[in-house]
Length: 319
Image (cartoon, rainbow, N blue to C red; front, top):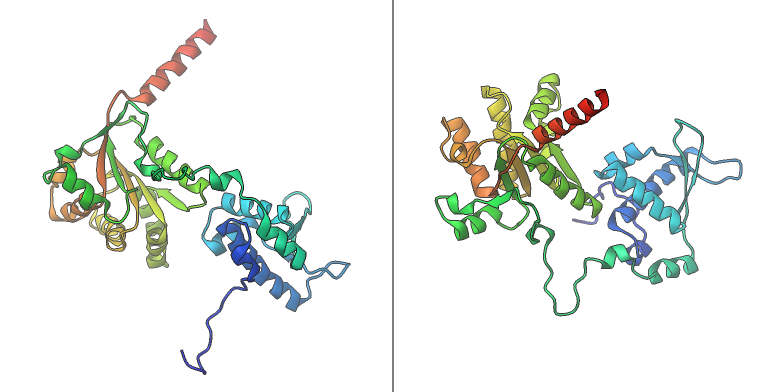
């Protein structure tokens, strides 16, 4: 950087946000709103009282900061409670007007002196107690069985190699209806409650999206690879074409090289993954087995039990 270097585009991030008792996502949303307010100010978007307002739908804010709409809703509520914005409802199907407020000295002190909320302290252990990451806590389910001992390099080597820098990377395998997708969804919900974005999809949908669009394929895959946590459901059920396998490899290899967290659910057995039918599958499965610690789900098919229960209730209604 020199004296003549042009600065890249940036968001206004007021200094008081550094110490304000607000969630990180809330601070980011405020910076984005403040940036949009400057545009409204330049274009003369003001109400009858001369107050500058912005029109910024929740979905667009979510896209701008790469977070979920629910995270944005929570952030807007927190900003409104803190007195940093005011929303004006405009009726059904119309986006709200948002008035961004600039706090004065007393308001800044109030923002910094707020007591920590229960949400921020509930996961803090007492002094001297070791913090246990969410993914290391014991799980109370009778369908969950670790199968690391089945790996050729043993249990201890599997943990070290599969987890790498992260400990929340799993390969959930087992029969149909044993709760793999449900368990992965629980992990996703727990992380999203902590405002950590999660992308959960499957390769059938990915390949359909890629096939439907000839433009922006690289950006589409790049967005998948940028997700803080990517969950691939029903792995191995996608079309086994040469093009399909290449796209599967591109996504898996990107997560492999970046060492970003990945959770995969599959009905394939560990034997199928360890002994692939060809080289194209081998280079995909080999990366998965190195990245992800295999966890076996066993037990009865809960969907079948649910269907039988529904049938029984229907018979009772018809009798």
